[in-house]
Image 1 (spheres, rainbow, N blue to C red):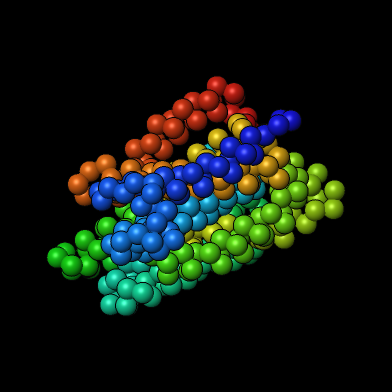
Image 2: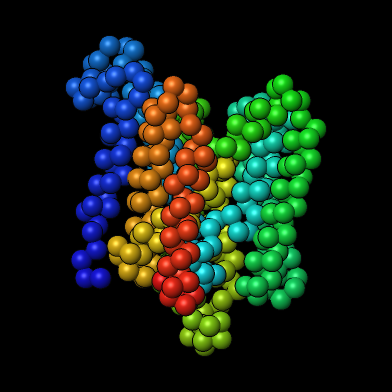
Length: 328
């Protein structure tokens, strides 16, 4: 594609964040938003804009960006358009960590840290098993499924043990996904992992294109395939673990948005990665606006992404079958 719509892709997430400052149960006009940002509006409006809506929108943008980047990288690495960031068990591990923190009474401000570490542990187990049994893509996928199933089962045990009046509702709400508690602290926690993971994927972008070849062909071109896969998995895991630890379980973003990016900018990962990041940020900020304003009570983000993502996935899968199961 000669002229990718980079201007549009750059404007979309920024525009979504600005619109999100206007949207909510408390009506605010454009002038009040500007006054709130500059600190010249009444204190209530300034607090609403600066301390509630702006950090929540930025956190949604970072979470969406993380999930979309990880999805694009994993789809390229596994040479499979139906892969999403959950394939290696990081989400299941992070969910188990959050539930464990809730049941053991870990302070709320440390819950995301426990979730993050357990997500990393899950993928560490996957990489350990993969290295022990040959290091092939097939072994990695099977290991991810098994480790994810193990942590899902452990999560089920914790839910069975949880207090049904207090702990179980907290676990269930977290698993549904939400940015209701997002503040500047959440943004600060997300930002370094987003920069680190996204920066690593940008460095890998040219090599990621070579993974579309067979492993022997890629190796003949001087590519250390196993080392590259480990680096990609590490970068993607940091992105997903950070997103899940802050927002809970939010599916479909990492599966659908990379396909929209490829449709707009072509298959080269030097273009797909930034386009996926922009579309992921735009999508989740937009869905978060719907989540907090469509009904009297917030709709969990995981529910919204499922309602939209499942039909989109069905169309994607039918398109995939119509092309004979080929990449694209």
